Length: 91
Image (cartoon, rainbow, N blue to C red; front, side, top):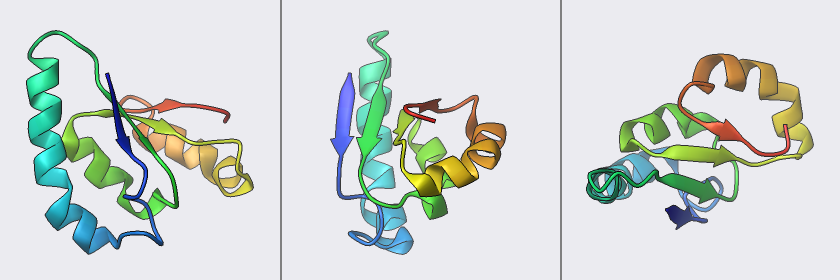
């Protein structure tokens, strides 16, 4: 199941506000969906490199956007650090 969190990335929402206002609720939704045996992933827009660790806390899989040049430059690090939790589109 797709959770669309288009505006959780910067510059739309700060890391602090994402942690306070999104993470706890997305975690609850993700747990409820996963309890039915349904996989869950989240699609985002915007810059999310500063909050990838917080996405892990939600329990969702995250579709890392690509093929943006910024992601291409960091793709090795992102795949190394988060490759078990997320899947990658375009990188």
